[in-house]
Figure 1 (spheres, one colour):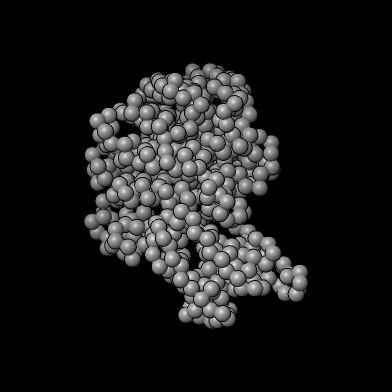
Figure 2: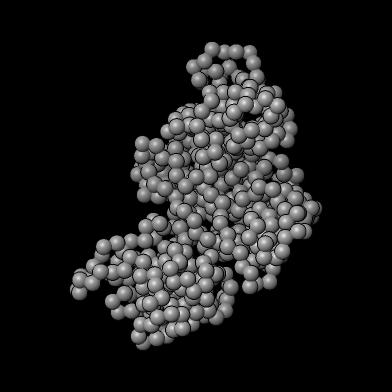
Length: 509
């Protein structure tokens, strides 16, 4: 039986099979190169197509949207019936999209309301006084909004979709005390999916670190964009990723308690390259303006091909070691916004450039190689799953009774390349984790080969430091040891034993 098999239930190992082969394939249903897209998806081994359909602002009439959405599902599942397609229900509503849709009888029945011959009402769906307003944030505490969300979800399930991205869920649930309204809608769609979905199961994510009520998670997994730290000492628009937050735990929708639910990272989009920023900001100002004056995917697409391939590998390894509960949704298709700055086509596509996909960015083979390698090669070097609890609290050495330090920090010239300040002995970014037996450890990715230095700061202070280069403890930054990185995107794990001051370094490529 395939690792991706499920019917009515999806244990964590099956969910992680799909997340470990995940992608963002935004608005794939609109693609004019779908034949080559499917070829590339199958070649790379992608099994989860995130954001494949959905509406931010309507691109076409309602029924045409669902017709094209259904056609996409039929073509994808004819090629690989195992693939999960994800639809989006976002945190934005537009009057012109909402008020042209007649409310079907099944929606009234699902909410226990008498049938009315009418269309959805924009003004009943949004926050505040919407008179004269054509777009607004939805308010899920309103019954009309719940009906709209449910309607859209049912239509996507009927088209063959089995997953939903619910957008910035903490925005439209602002008035939803206890998350009762969004919980109701999600549960109603789960129940509909049990009977009508392809494999009698639908799954949900949103931009959230945790959405738990009475100990139970409303979501199957959490999802967030990545966070960056710009590099100013390297030519071009270089940046590194920074660990931020964690995926919360709780009882999963499968009824199993999870200390941390699965997590999915992505390169997000929100407007493309900021032309004003490109023309008016200094180099240093642009570095700190979003992702070098643009959104994440437009920055990525703007880089040279070799750099794109390298950054994909870096992101994959970074995800594997910084959060062992997390996975990375490789970009397959994503809007570029200001496409004229990056290319002639307003989408990034990972396809190998060819006559069938003239606007391909040629990351297809890199994605295939990384998915073939898999996460487990690097998971064995990962930092602990509870990435905010560093451990080492009130732990004494059993032989001497000496209290172990709660805070131990790696510092040195390598720190900016993992998103920290150079020589910051008090950094939370490069804080080491207590792993037992008097040992502390930290794993990180070095994106560039070269010579760096490092030392260990016990108690997070420069007054008590050690390194392999010095036989005794020292204070300050002068006694650091060399850290030789032989290749770009090397995985580094450094382990420190407090009572003996032994320091070991492992480098994995």
